[in-house]
Structures are given as C-alpha cells and as structure tokens.
Image (cartoon, rainbow, N blue to C red; front, side):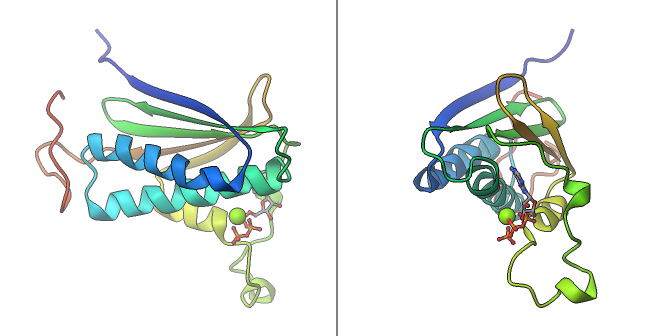
Length: 155
Ligand SMILES: Nc1ncnc2c1ncn2[C@@H]1O[C@H](COP(=O)(O)OP(=O)(O)OP(=O)(O)O)[C@@H](O)[C@H]1O
Ligand SMILES: [Mg+2]
C-alpha cells in the first residue's frame, strides 16, 4: 500500500509582503521532513526566488491575482509547487546567466539558483491558474539525518 502523503496548500493575494509567509510555511514543512541547516537554507532560497518570480514576472504585481503554494511530502521527496495566474513562460527561452555577456548583469540568476538547490525544477501550466513551477528535493535518509536535522519518525 502507498505510504501516506502529507499535503499543505494555501492561496494568497499576489503581494510581495506574503513572500515571508510562503517561506515560513515551506520551512516548517521542510523541518518536519528532517532537513538539516543546509537543506532548509536551500529550500528557503528556492522558494524565495520562485515566489518572487510568480508575483513579479507571472502576476506582474497585480493584487487582483493570486499566488498558490502547495507542499507534498512523499516517502522519498518533498515536492513544492508555486502557481501564478500569468502568461506561460518557458525556462529554456530564458537567457543563460552564465553566458559571458550576462555575467555582469545584476539579475537573471533566480532559476539558476533554484536548479542548483533543488533536485528537480520544471514549469507547466495549471488548470484555472497559469504557470506552475514544480520543484522537488529528495528527503534526507532517516538513518543519516542532516546536520541540525531531526530524524523522521514514520518512514
Ligand atoms: N513565474 C514566471 N512567469 C513568467 N516569467 C517568469 C516566471 N519566472 C521566471 N520568469 C522569466 O524568467 C526570467 C528569469 O528568471 P530568474 O528568476 O532567473 O531571473 P530574474 O527574476 O529576472 O532575476 P533575479 O536574479 O532577481 O531572480 C525572468 O526574467 C522572467 O522573464
Ligand atoms: Mg527571479
């Protein structure tokens, strides 16, 4: 039988002031998963970049729009989805921040950071929404918890 999946879902007004709340919720769930200091920091950075992208690029800071956060804890991974109500974008069309001509630009590194910190990053379209960024990170092994992490009890 499949193991139980924990799921947390919230929808918020697309306002930059809510980025902190999104981060706190993601951190709280990630802590429960047994991530240690490094893993928690990486998840925090990825969620921070993704939420700002959804609000600024996706929803164009339109307060009438919404941003969605969904966290699913699977036996082997934490899956985080961030939704916006904007037009579709393809991350493959985004300029590579590591190209020589982009190295000095002050922006354009959010997706690169997310890809570096998470095991999976993809973008799709979500019915009744717009873009849905899906990020996953493998859970630390219960027998080898990360530094500063607490072992998961029910694995
Ligand atoms: N949710 C989104 N909706 C629409 N376009 C997006 C979305 N997320 C990212 N993008 C596009 O991808 C580009 C790259 O995003 P990325 O986060 O890497 O850099 P940035 O947001 O431009 O700068 P920063 O380094 O400050 O994050 C953005 O400039 C934007 O054009
Ligand atoms: Mg960004």
